[in-house]
Image 1 (cartoon, rainbow, N blue to C red):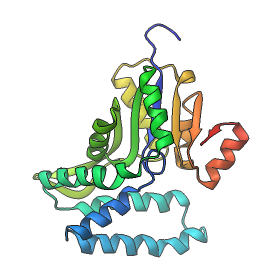
Image 2 (image 1 turned 45 degrees about the vertical axis):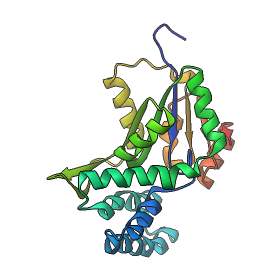
Image 3 (image 1 turned 120 degrees about the vertical axis):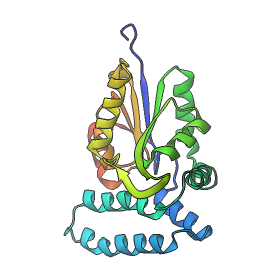
Image 4 (image 1 turned 90 degrees about the vertical axis):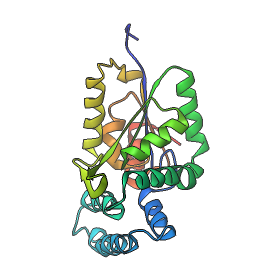
Length: 227
């Protein structure tokens, strides 16, 4: 490795590091706390209604997944900053972290012990990733930013959603802004989703974790590690 270069370990969150999923956690939080229940109900109905169109290929898988991801912000519309902070901690400590995948967590700890820079990235809320990163000692987080207007969540994201090619672009931009020299050939990336292919292809050591059918096929063809 060249002098000054760092090795990187990139971890996706939902489905990779944890088995829980943000959208379901927000739905549960809203019903538990009697907040935005109508918005949560509409989120479910709206996206479930699109499922037959997705299964019959009338809408693309990417558009279908984006709808689920972008719509989460609408379920937290109107929350004040302090209440949003309470929600982020609940989602992290009570919903997501209890579903940590031990074998993937062990990989994270090993990379940290070996001096890798670690990035937690997801379409999930940036503020939520920051909470989880503190619990697990990640160096950096890259997620989706929520728009705040007059100290309240507006129900919108600050474009763009941290998803697909956009996620990889956010990572590259972040590393450039930090002036970090990365040895990508010796770096690792972990994901369960075909849509994270751009991230997996960034590094010399892609690892797929309980992958979806499309990613599993690619991983087998390329000889990538599967866990």
